[in-house]
Image 1 (cartoon, rainbow, N blue to C red):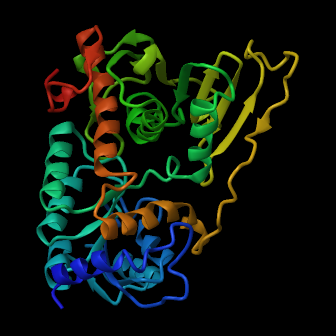
Image 2: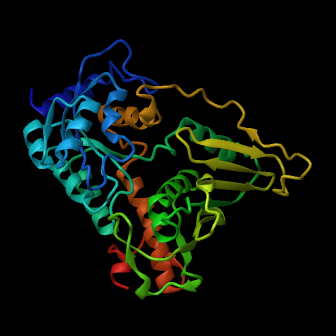
Image 3: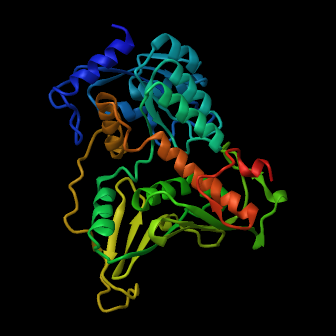
Length: 393
């Protein structure tokens, strides 16, 4: 059966045999999808074990893996059970014609060529974040996938957690902490502090902000190097090939619907701690924290002063928290909601819940921070200029 006919049959069959969103296809070990993996041991690796993603479902068979590094290729293929291996991912895609592809490298500089090659063979899949180094490339890959009605998801595993959906319902819809007044977020503030932190970890923060607040309308920012405003002379390449970056401290604010501001900060300091990476939500009757983990940690206090020494200072976990299914392999089980939704999106012919457009929008918030600092004034979102702002500074 030709691959296009196969997918048409699978989509039609979805009405009578829907997948289970909270688990593998129950009692059905038939391999319905042929999957492949693109990795590069020496140029971004496999992200957070993206080569293992397909093992989360019984209806997916890993038929091939491509990696130009011979030793890395053999190791990763053994780990994910790939039947065939290739040094060249283009050769793999052409010969194997997979239904699904996982693009693992963290480095963004080749994401566009990987994605366009997958589009050429009509494959769906998942790609490691961030999406691309700039908006022009992001626009191109989104357009290529949408032109062929291909379903692709970003590896935004934190936002996809049922805990976050529950937090959104209680905090933003049910008013658990009153009216939302602002959202603050920080990066990890490790060796990548500042402009690189804005890209690598900030991309998760921005995706989470959009999920909670919708799309921002504008951005203002101030970026410094050793306390002085960053200039064009301070632009440098990131420690990993992610495009140009600037600044060891970044402070950015975004305007969301209803006048709610969302903040991002990553500031050089001697006591940087990854545990601060996440978001704090401030409401008229209390505040909540969201800290990034395989299962994000969410807690809140009912204290309108936002002061832990207040009358009701005890932090609490959210009431009626969902029971989160433990999926195997355990180290990538937290990606299960994304992979399940990808398959459902294919079979139901709809946009995935965590799509390439979400990756594009998070990238736009990153680029807006650079653009606003360069302009020394607020910039409107969507950005009019789609090239990388630091490349024309």
